[in-house]
Image (cartoon, rainbow, N blue to C red; front, side):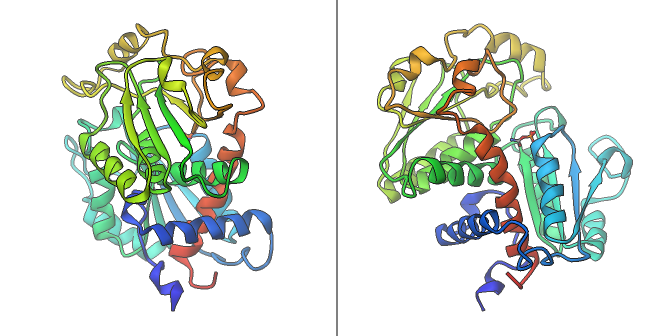
Length: 340
Ligand code: CP
C-alpha cells in the first residue's frame, strides 16, 4: 500500500527522500491548498497531538505548524525546551533517549528547531535532530536546524512552480549572499541548493570571499546538477552573477568561522556589514531575465534586499510563506496518517 511508504518517516532534509516522494508531497500540498477545508483532510489527525519545541525564535514555522495541526483536526503543543529539564552538555537532566521514547507515547509527531546561538559548532543541531529521530517511534520533523530547512525548500519549489513554471528545469536560480544584521544559519540556503539542483535548475551561488558553505553540501549540489541536467557555478562578483537569472534568492548567511571561539553574533554582523555592495536591488535585477525574487523570511530589508524588490510585483515571498502551511499539512498527513 502506497500510504505505508510514508507512514512513520522523519523529514530532516529533502535529500533524504526520493525525488518521487518529494513530488508526492508537492502534489498533496497543492490539493490541500485547493480544497483547504475539505472533510477529506480536516480529520486526518483528529484528536492527535503534534509536539513542537523551539530552541530559537520563529514566526512562520510555529504559526504554520500550529495552523496545520488544527486544519488536520489535531492539535500542536508548543513546548519550551527550557521548561523540560532536558540533559544538555552542561546540565543534568533527561536524556534524548528517554524524552523521545516518552513523547512517542503521547503524540503522532515531533518537530524541533535548533540553530544559530543554541549550538556549539556547525552540525550539532542536525545531529541533535537525528538523535531524536533514532530514539522516537514517531516522525521527527526538522523545523530548521543549522544545516537544513526542508519545509522551506519545499515551499520555495511550490511557489516557483505556481508562479513561474510547473517545470523549472533549465531555469537559473541565483543563490545570493546578502549582507545583513542577523548572522543566519545555513539551513534555508543549503536546502535550496539541494532541492533546486534536484529539480534540474541551473544554480549560481554568489558570495564574497570568506563565506563558503558546507563543502559536503556543495559536492552534493554539484552531483544533483549533473544527475538532473542542471549546471552549477560559484561567483564572487556581486553584480555580474545576476546576468541570466530567472530567480534571485538573496539571503544572509554566517561565515564558516562563526563558531571558532564560541558563537559571536556581533562579530559576525560587524563583518557582514562591511560588504554593503551585496544587496539585491532594482538596478541589479535589471540585469536578470526579468527574475522573480524569493526569500524564506524574515527579510532583513535594506541589507539583504531593498523594499522596492522585496515588495515588488516579481516578489513571491508571501506566496511562499503561505505554502509553508500547505507543505507541512501534506507532510504531516503523509507521515502521521494513512487515510490521505
Ligand atoms: N522561514 C522561517 O522559517 O521563518 P520563521 O523563522 O519565522 O519560522
